[in-house]
Image (cartoon, rainbow, N blue to C red; front, side):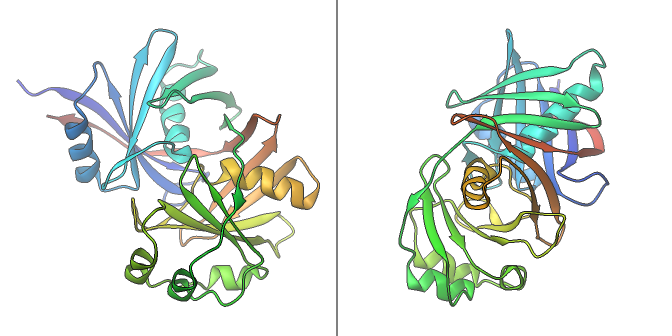
Length: 270
């Protein structure tokens, strides 16, 4: 007899369907082998699919792109919290724990979800000229690297440059092989937002991720220091777009708040 697994598709960091970043959420009754979770992620063909399993007081969560397991995924955590909150009106807080032991607390915040994430740092890092050429970036303000997510950060001065990037993804992959992705960021020219970003990850997921919570685990402190404020609003200017409300809580934690819409519910038979 086929095993049944409840499955949801959720558009994260958007208040309406077909915006933000779609994530798959599988609610498990028991652990699945890694190869099976990877196969499901390939079948779903979304940037990430989360596998959620209650484990005592905590909820274990793992993230798979169609290519590989991902250590941390903000939008899939938001999607998972949205699903669990929708099933229990009395549930207000969820304590997730990732495979690597990172604890992520999700709290119901009106019609949104607030996620308590680690406050990661970056360090100066030179960017290969071949990577900049592949992305069509002529001048940068700053470049750095985040160890936890294996991601490069590139700041450019002009948000219009950011919005108009059309990278050569094959050339990007050929230029460097020790990272999982590159986030490009710029101050926003829109008074509603403090900064903007786009995330490209042909090494580990897809060409461009629509909205990326994980990059904001270090972008938040970076822009908080740069702008001299603890609360910020970020815009990910991908084709689908996404909005993230951010707050530096302590040196160890930040808060990422966003809306999410459940757009599909079904059952997997495996």
